Image (tube, rainbow, N blue to C red):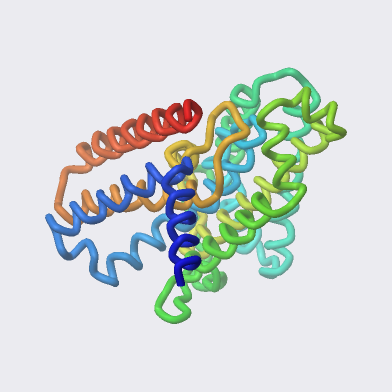
Length: 323
């Protein structure tokens, strides 16, 4: 019994010393405070709404975490979602079957993310600039497809976005499944360790036998696959290809990863931190609505919590390094 107690204390101590602990504590304190101010915030229905609201952006944040861990960044994910979602809606309205449209949607994301990854990995161009260029390209393609209007698909593709097994939205199951899978990959596989190695020091990773260029290309393709899943889920949920269906989601995806402890310089972070980060950001937005706060103040509080969370995480990291 004593051994079990010591084991639990050891696990607790390890967690409290981890980079994820500060943001987790911020999240818990926020939930308690808002729940005290407005008890409706903690009602099961509202919690379910929060989970559904963050799930699609969460999928993008998972991909962003992988990219950032490898030392890159992708500013195009929001408009990439809009482009793929609207392209799929256009193809459905044109009469193609859903399986064919899904395959084409995945093919488009693999092709585009592969080209982006190839340019980034084979040249010395900054990922920030390359992905910014692709963001503008995707924005242009989106408006070319839609001509600025929505493309309605009705109920022809509602499985991913508008079904509720056990009362919980399908997007939540997809997000949780992806998070668990990628978390295990990062923690327990050689592939995961190589992501950290490339992000920490590309030259050292190369000398250790890692094909850094090919590895980065693979990371961007995986990110593209996650974008395709997010785009399909968002299209299914909305029932329409809206040109703005992904606009701005890149900011929340990056913020969730950074707030969760993923370093912009690469080589540091984890999936659990990103999950907590996206839950915190989603809870902030929801809480402001529940307590009837002006949408303008929502941005102020959201930004403030991001800054505080990152600051706490930074100084906690410095303390751990000093020890």
